[in-house]
Length: 188
Image 1 (cartoon, rainbow, N blue to C red):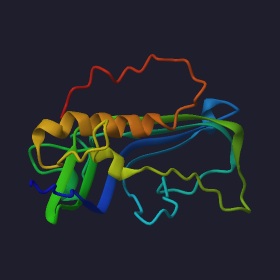
Image 2: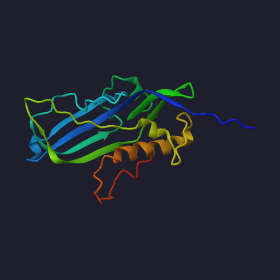
Image 3: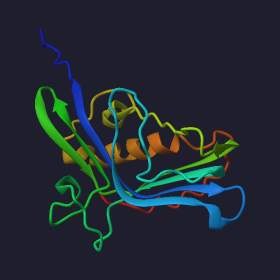
Image 4: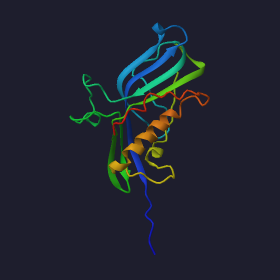
């Protein structure tokens, strides 16, 4: 009788390199809010994540964009997880898989773009937050719910696809636009 091994993950750290975060104003482009080139440590306890290093300017915003990309070569990165000297990375996940430590690093570029309806109103007197929840464990599952070993390079393409799909999950459901221009990215 063969025994079945139970696979398990313990995700301990998830970091994203934010190339650009933008809130587009309902007015004109001159009042858009942008922040760029920073690292976000995703909270693993479900608490809100701060997606900007700066305070968001008061205004009315109708679109949110987040670009998770590898840092450009001319950017100094103060976190060795994103720059190992040979490669730069956009996403870093650390944890345990079946009790063994792993670090998964992606070189892919990911984007979240959401129309805010009703528009997000930011005022001087209130704390405003945008909250995104991402099921990181789903990044390491195949279509049947089986584990994808994060240390097996044959799984890297599927894991990157899962990350992309989790980000696309924030897109508007009634958006019939299938013109994603990220399909030609093939970095693993």
